[in-house]
Length: 185
Ligand SMILES: Cc1cc2nc3c(=O)[nH]c(=O)nc-3n(C[C@H](O)[C@H](O)[C@H](O)COP(=O)(O)O)c2cc1C
Image (tube, rainbow, N blue to C red):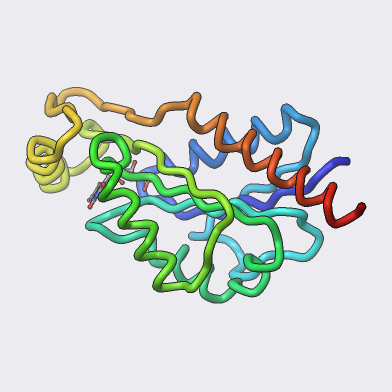
């Protein structure tokens, strides 16, 4: 059976958008449909006709994108009804998984949504793209966080493990297929 998956996400510097794109590619590779929606410029409702939803958000200053939190709150009934997953992008996911899990627990409390699957993915340190203040602030944060984050301001660092992203997407498709098999049987 071909499934249609909706992938709404929030991104500030673009890493969550890249991960969402990658998940969409994995889904299409298995012959399913995937529709991406950047929540900075998309409608605030999940359209009809989807078999599953994967929501993505990144962490800034300890919080997931506000747009995403509001989107989840508005669409909680649909997210509860459909097979749904959430992925969180942060530097903590690279070195301090307890902190990264805490961010997701906080989102679950704020929204009362319990995604069936959760992915924690390392984000990026894009020193060459940040302005002066952000660049130096991020260097200070990188130095103080566990997980050996880079501090060379003349380059960027990407901590996303793409194999893990692939497994997350494949696992969601398995979960979707298992659910379809039981409800139609
Ligand atoms: C200003 C700023 C603040 C950040 N704050 C945190 C933080 O509190 N905890 C964390 O784990 N990562 C933090 N990060 C890392 C981001 O989660 C990471 O850069 C991610 O790739 C951003 O994803 P996006 O480009 O999709 O917005 C921060 C990044 C920036 C630029």
